[in-house]
Length: 221
Figure 1 (cartoon, helix red, strand yellow):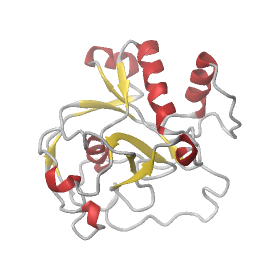
Figure 2 (cartoon, rainbow, N blue to C red):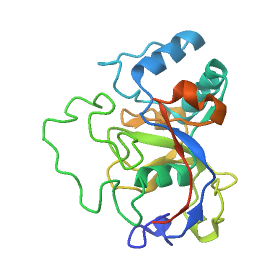
Figure 3 (tube, rainbow, N blue to C red):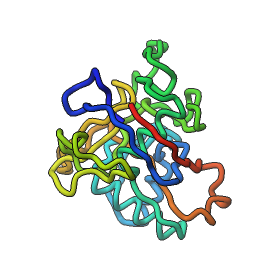
C-alpha cells in the first residue's frame, strides 16, 4: 500500500495481506440509492440517469445504505477498508499508479462534462471491477491519520481507532487514498459516491453478476 514518491501520508509503501472478501463490480447507482431513499424516507435527490453512480453521498448516509442493504439482501454489506479498496483497485497489477498502468488515460474531452457517467462505461480492471479510480471518489471505512502507514499492521489493517476524517479513494491521482471531513455539510459533494463490500459467501451465487470474490495475496504500492 502507499506510494514511496507520493505525499508524506502515502509513505512508506508497505506490504499488507487482506482476508478474502467480496466487492461490488460497480459503483452504487442512482437506482440503488433511490430504492434506499424511498424505503427510509430520505429527501428526494434529482439525478440525470439511474445507472450513473449516486453522488453527493456523505459518509453517514453511506453507512446507513449499507445497513439497509444488509437487511434487504440477508448478507453483511459494508464499506471497504482502505486496504481492501487498494488491493481491488490494483486488479493484480503490483506497484502501478493506476489500475491500467503508470500513465494517466487520455480521454475524450467531452466525457464527464455534466457529472458522473453511467457505471461500466470504461473497461474493467484485471479483477473485472468497473470504474476503479474513475467517475466518482469512493468512501472507505477507515478513519484517517497522516502517520498511520508507519504503524499499520501487516494483516488486515482496519485504519486508526479514531479520528475526525475518513479515508476515501482518490479518483484523479491513481491508486491511493486521501481523506475527507465526515461532517455532512463537508462531505456531500458532487464527486463523492461509494462501492460496497460484502461478506457471506453462500449468498454470492445470488449476486454473482454484482460481486467479485477477491482473495488475497500480498499487496503493496
